[in-house]
Length: 160
Image (spheres, helix red, strand yellow):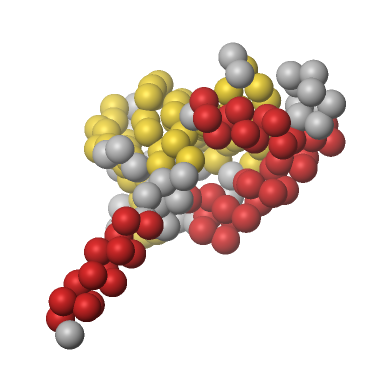
C-alpha cells in the first residue's frame, strides 16, 4: 500500500511545474514598487495570437482589457502573487495601474504597488501553485536590499 501512495505522490509532483515563465524587473522608490513582468517567448506567442485579434502587433485598449480580465484579474484572489511584510506584520497591498503591451514579440505587463517604506521590509513574488514562475532579472532601488531567488520565485529584503 505504501508503494501505491508513493506512486500517486510522485505522479502529482510531476504535474506541479510552471506553465508561465515571467522575467521580472523591479524598481523600488520611496513610496512605491514598480513591476515589469515579461512573459516567456512561447507563451507570449500564444497569448499574442489569442488577444491581438486584429493581428497588428499592438494590443489596443479593448484587447489589453480582455487580457487583463482573463489573466491578471484572477490573480487578485492571491494578492497578485505578491507578499509584503513590514517588521513582523503582513501588509496587504493592492497593485494598480496595470498596463499590458507587446515589446520585441514578448507580452509585457507593468503595474505599481504603493507603500511608504519606513522600516525594514520583505517583498516576495511567489505563486504557491507553481503555475507561474517569476524570475528576478533586474532590481533598481533607492534603498539597500538583499535578494533571495530561485527558478520559481524571489524575495527582496529592503532596508530604508
